[in-house]
Length: 536
Image (cartoon, rainbow, N blue to C red):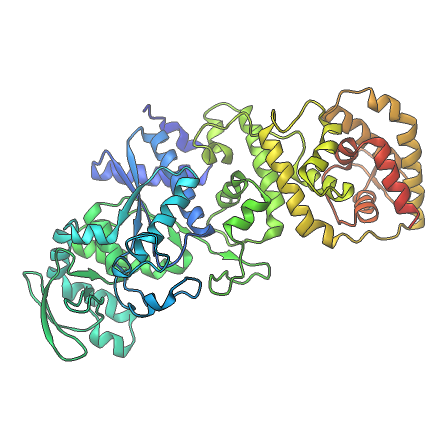
């Protein structure tokens, strides 16, 4: 691949991250980059999983474009972790309760479809990542430990045992501090991952410890007979595999700091890290899987295409954002605008466009819609469309040359708009009564639309027709109390007129250019809507 270092001059956070990684590899003399994302497979993949892998993939693509160097993305599952509690939403829960403490890959699958509970959840993770087309290599903690891929690093950790303890101990309470070791031996009889103090950690990598019954064991750190505790395990992976880049959430800032110190103690430089902010719910509270106060990925995809979710994840990853249903329309329209702009932009400026990153440098020509998603939502609301077919009848008023078969992306947006409108728009629409001044303006708008209907209908569908209607709407609003002075001294139309249109006719506070809505809905039908509003 041809390298283009000049891309680093473009303002885009994946390029900035890729630049940091390029500097790291140049300093270390490496010619291949390893990216990593990690998962705890006791639960199912979620919208945060998508965000982390998507963001990492964008940095990876930017790195390849800047340097021309090869790279890999390792999706690492910590499936050797001991199960601490049994989820409530699984069948045969008693199977899990009877095996608490054991590695996930040593616990029977309560679903009865895989060799273990860990294998089941790993399969769900891989299917999730595959569904979005991510390019990755899957890695199992159980496999890496049992196959000896961490043996040398574990022996090194045994050598540095006291130094690593010294890093972690100041962060622990008195009781935990007295018993802490970075090693968790696997009980040779019960198979449980043991959290017990080490009586001795020998230089040859032998752990000496006792179980709850007082029985004494000598366990090698190698060949899957033990695993490392969380922060030490993270550092172990970085050290053993030579990980160059991994991002993580704000809740892991302390873990990154401690794991980085352990990695250095083992003798390696920790990877480049981006700390991304956590999502907030509609009230500004942190999203919690246990509370269920967030938005699931299935819910997002019911109301919008995955590209819009990519747009949401792309925007300012280091700032906290509300992740709730009302952010979806803006994300869709932002994506549409960026994709349209990207198709008309050449490199290197194109590399500053989010759509270029979302599509790995190849924005599809189909990523286009003659109507914004917000317009589709308003159109669905005013038309009371209950099915995509209903809404398509009105879309063709605006763009008669479109059809589901020839415009697949628009077809997706139409279907999503109907679903979103049904659940979130129509139930909250509360049109108000027009004031006397607003009534006069709306009556004038009816007259102007009637007088210009033939000329407008003769115009080609699309932006030109919508602009002509928008001009008529402006003219109808050039009256008190809606006028406002322009910079050149002339009188223009203020937001009050357009707010009145949305509040009186649709029951919404705002929306897209109203000319686009009327163009899509049709002159005759729009006049009927205005007349019905005035008759209330």
